[in-house]
Amino acid sequence: MARGFSTPSPAERALRYALLLAVLLLTVGPFLWELSTSLKGAGEDVYTRTPSFLPDRPTLANYATVARTVPVWTYAANSLLVAGIAVLGNAVGATAAGFALARLRFRGARLVLGLVLATLVLPGEVTVVSQYVTVRSLGLADTLLGVALPGAIGMLNVLLMRTAFRAVPPDLDAAALVDGANVWQRLVHVGLPNVRGMLSVVVIFTFIGAWDDFLWPLIVLDDPNRYTLTVGLQYLNGTFSANPRLIAAGTMIAFLPIVAVFAALQRSFFRGVEEGAVKG
Image 1 (cartoon, helix red, strand yellow):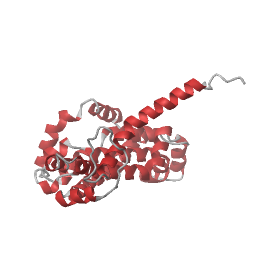
Image 2 (cartoon, one colour):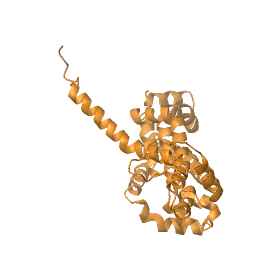
Image 3 (cartoon, rainbow, N blue to C red):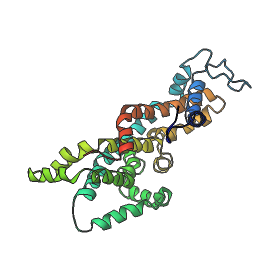
Image 4 (cartoon, rainbow, N blue to C red):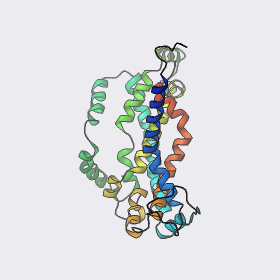
C-alpha cells in the first residue's frame, strides 16, 4: 500500500514515540519520584541501590510532620495572597493596556509600545535595586503587598494581550461603534469574549511566576511570619536535612497548587497557545 509524502514510516513513528517518552521521563519523572518519596514511610530506605518507585506502605504522615514543624500553611496562604494580587493586576491591567495599544488611537502610542518592548531587554535582576528603593519609599517593605506590587503588571503580558486584541476582526469593532458602544463596552462585550484563551495563558504564567518567585520575596521580607512558601521551604533544608521524605513532602505541597490551577484552565490555555487569539 502506497504512503503519501506526509505519512511517517514505521521507523519514523517509533522514533517520535521514543523521543516523546524520553521527554516525558525528563519532565514528569522527577515530580513523580518526589511524590513517591513523600509517601514512603520511615521504614523504607530511599537510598537503596535498587530503589522502589512505588512505596511499600503509602502514608501521609510526612505531610502531617511538615505541617506541625514548619508553618507551611501560613506560608502557602502568603504565597496565595501574593499570587492572587499579581493575577488580578495582570488580568485587569495587562488586558486594559493591551486593548489600548491594539485598538485605540492616541498620540504617543508608538512611543509607549517602544518603551514596553525596551523593558523586556533588561533582565529582572538589573531592576531589583530600583524596585526595592521604590517599594521602601512607599512604606511597603516587609509587606506582602510590596512583594506582589512589581509583578502586578508584566510587560510581556501586555504584549501578549495586545497581540490577541489585534487578531480580533476590525469589523466587530466597527459594528460596535455603529451601535453606539463606548470604549469600555467594546472591551467587555467585543474584546474579552474573543481573547479568553490568551487571558488564560497570562493568568497561568503569572500565577506560576508569583508562586515560584524566590529572590524578590527574600529581599523584601524580614518577618518570618510573612514569608512566602518558596522562602519558608528553605527551613526544610535545615530542619529536615537528613530526611528526604519530609523535604519531598514540602516540595509537593508547593507544587500541587500549580497543578490545580493548570488543570482548571488547561482548555483555555491550549486554545490560547494554539490560536494566539481568536477566530473572528
